Image 1: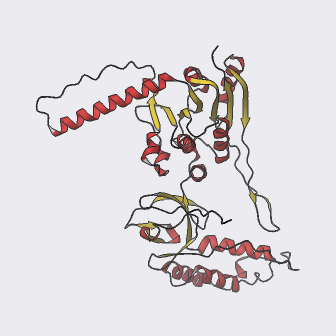
Image 2 (image 1 turned 135 degrees about the vertical axis):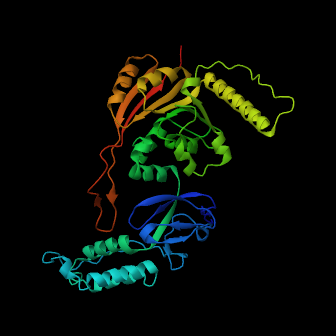
Length: 395
């Protein structure tokens, strides 16, 4: 039986992508045709060279701004020797190359006259203690130099996981500290499935709303209740959503929840100008869109209520609970436990909810290498807290 072939996802013109650099730092860029993408000391390259390339491959930046894919390296078993690091004094005197010679190598590397492998090989060859190191220490030494000198990068698709991981490292406050593993628990507890109608309050600039959109696919809807006249869902612009997926997101401001719609009565002048005609059409479409949003919200019977808010969670739950369907999940995330304690006590006393749980997320990353698998020495302190409960249908 022939194995099923899956076409690789490729980078398109105008797409946002996450670029992971040798230093393990990342940045989000837009692949605009006929532009140059700069990666600081790691060089720059033409965006056109990246269009049509698959995600996840490692590319090396060559002289002149061109790129070429690097051969994928597997994890080879390290040979055990009798070498040890006991008598190694790894100080600046161990390096035979002078400071001026090293700076000259760096300058040639930036100009593209020598490759990163040649720089690293020269540094290792002229290091008096390198030969005395264990194979594990040699591997670490080379990896450190690669993170410093390699002019390469890995383009990653802006999936929910990659965006969550990126913003948690770069700007966790933007997404209210919502770590990727916690986000997965929120989606699982909320039982978000294809075709679901989800009521959401996302004050984390759209990461949660985007994650919900990725789960409902083509037949569902995410109804976002937001602060202010316009929703601040900045993260969504990085997700390369199709127009159809964007249409699955319906929003309504808190101030409009109890709004009573009136008929659109504006009348155009007898001979309107182009600006007057355009403004009239814009206001008419806005009025119709608002009317549809209010009608959808008042219809209720949502399949899940997912909340990540800067307001008091108990007050938000009380306001939105009547619009949640029976036997449906309520899930509330907060980076701190204290705001959820009041909501937890309220739900425990309520006859409308059962199976009320308050949990904390915890994650420990591991290095997985042959003969060197162990937990990393540093980790994030907390991934936040999740309050969940099952909403009962009214009798």
